Image (cartoon, rainbow, N blue to C red; front, side, top):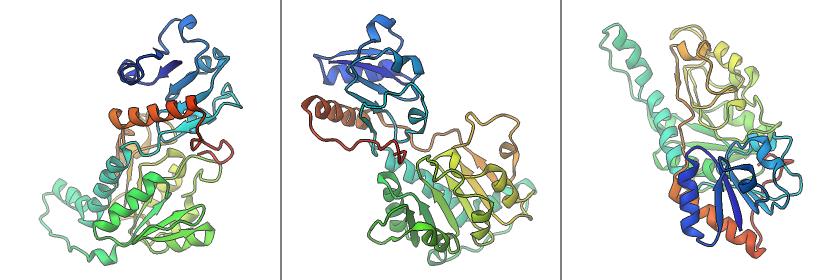
Length: 311
């Protein structure tokens, strides 16, 4: 079994896979072309096109992350090779931490205290009842469902939205256009954890951002394509006293790294983080990668990505 690995810190992944599969030939994409060609499996994150062109006998592709948008947009991607992706693999807890921080940041008025500090203004803010701070989670896959449950356990009313009906204990689950409109009209914070597909691109555009209650906040640790960035800037206004929205915590962007001259960097109501909300924990991910390789090699069924749906 030959496996080619392409990801940042590929040597670390190579060593971990080789230790778990001592009889496999595990090489990184930095190896000479003759060594990385004709692999049985690719374990990759944002792989270059030439890596796919070199393969003639692929049995499977493992996407070393939850998002497959980059992979599916690669023209050289083989059309008849099954694709699997990391599902949770330890990322859910990290994502929940990030989202809970974001919700609490606005709920406990940390944005207002930061603004007050700049002018040495001492003014305690009222703490609202959590029952009056509903949170909406767009996307109820493995990670989104975990995040929704974590928010509910933290005491917030949670509304979840997905393309198809879902059920999560303690969470009001909605679906379809009507369900999305219902959710947006009620929540104080909206969290986007959807995949990047044609159907989800700019799902939060100007019209939908306007449906949020005045003073609502936006948290996006999902995909940069989910939010129309110019519409978000318009909804935020120019400063703390203007705009429909109170603020935004953004981890992902249409173009990454976020260009240095982008106005989101300097907006007083925005926190920018560099796509770090839920890095993949190596140990948990390796366990899942090995299980996929065993299943592929044994001809056992695995949950594959549907390229038409984009996840």
